[in-house]
Length: 367
Image 1 (cartoon, one colour):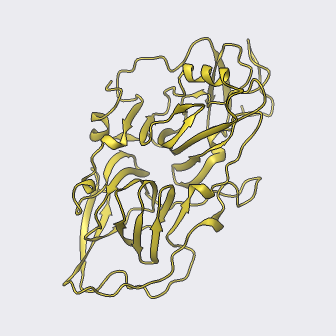
Image 2 (tube, helix red, strand yellow):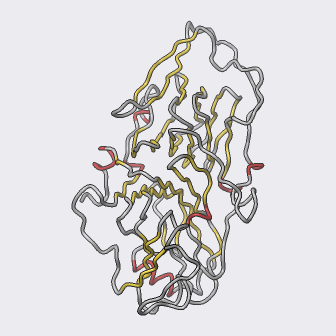
């Protein structure tokens, strides 16, 4: 049962996630590192396995995937992963949408990995740039007009994304909502065409479906708005990273937004832990209650470059973590680095995620 008393059996370090003395640090915890926890200290690397069957890690370079909007202005994003709570998609648009879109099954939260441009929304125009999060409320009509090829990681929830409830640090840490960019109402005049197509994006039982509505007037004709449900952008440069000198903090302190069964986190550059003996890399774990997607935006980990655009999926119940060689290097180079220079977007889901056929066909492991 849960208790403030934690038992110790066998050989264990005195400090949590520190002073391992050759052992491998493996955490078996409930509730995404917030519930009951067992820290196991193994002799061998728990990720050293060969997998057979659908519950296996998947790694794919997003640059190798081919969403239809990359080659066809009338195309759309590519579905990468899905479950009953969300869709995770990839867009690589370089041409303006010749139509408007409206995601009717839930809010849309997109991360701009590359590129810049304009989103025309019912709330007004929103510029986007690399490192932006773009929030579009459920059933809000918008149109993307890229300045250049724009790669977006897109997450559509089946309900609404919310700012996490304030913790002990208050409501501005790590996500300070006052740094969000909010559009000004700016109705767009008709441009002379006979009709305007608005595509409703919805999820039938199998895959992603569309329904088109056709208007004889411009659908972005909103002259004014008020309320607390609106589109916005928020750049990761404005995210307040929470750090510790003496212990590598769990992913929960990097939470950005959440929806039912879906949690989105920013792992961003930060000072490295400085107390000698502290493990600076995330400990081995098996995501007991969550599937996890890591999208590598860029940067490096103690001198080891992180491949930009890599998408890594770890199903719950399966061990994952940095390879042992990387951990040994971090210990050996402890005095050489005083900063973690990574930028990683993480998506955790309560329900198991199903990789699409395109993702499985491009899996780097090809198990």
